[in-house]
Length: 347
Image (cartoon, rainbow, N blue to C red; front, top):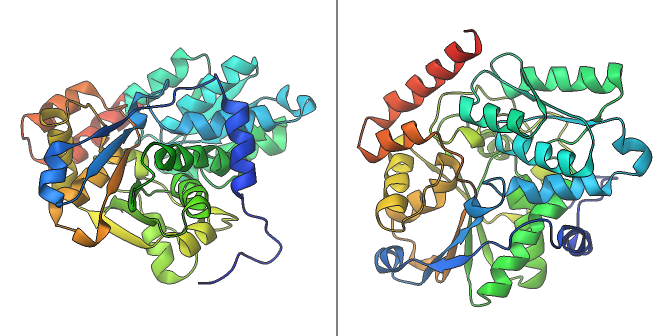
């Protein structure tokens, strides 16, 4: 495998251990539960890491809180900003409110309305810009350059990655015999942190990244050998949307060097996994969190052995969830949800 980029120090286990101390008492240690239904299909024990039960409904609170607390006091007063597909923005708004600092979250019109409303409910400003993460990032860059705010991006940031790494430690502490971790893959901050921490503790662990077939930026970048732009498309896994940044400093190299395999799942498979989580596991999860279950339901992977699927978030619009559970066409649902979200922005 290739080594780290020249001159760049990527987060290490020591950074995640520091993050865990910072985060103590500020978030939940979410449960790890056995899944008899998936175990029966898989042929080996399957457990679910229920991070969708985190305080803000997603894993993002770990990285965002760590990054805010790591800021020097003279920078906190400037306020923080980021581009987000929703969950990072909600986490950053929560962390900023706890620290008593201003927060502006920039999002595209494809972000579901329920996620925008949750950010505003936490006292942050939700600023809608364009139709992609790249459009939203332009506004973040302006806020930094013209208003002096501090950018805390959703994935390509050392403190964000170190905070997400606490999940890797938790999963192996709770199930030391785990052989494979299934982790949702978007910009790579989550899987980079999880893989770094888990492989440092247990080098034999297999880490599999899973994304959707529509607009999988990290997957396409890995194939190209460098970060590439991708078109954002309507998907039930909306939290996995967006590019990885053409000037990516950490997450691309870490995913390239640490992740063993990347799989893509279809909209139909994501919808089936959401239904399975509800009917068999009694869990309400969003599309991005369902991709690990989707991979387990799609094909047997006996070589994975004892497996943990990370359920990364539960912030799904409940009307959409009901329609998925009722069996409506997932492709049409994803497109209709995107249309409704964009229409709401311009109402």
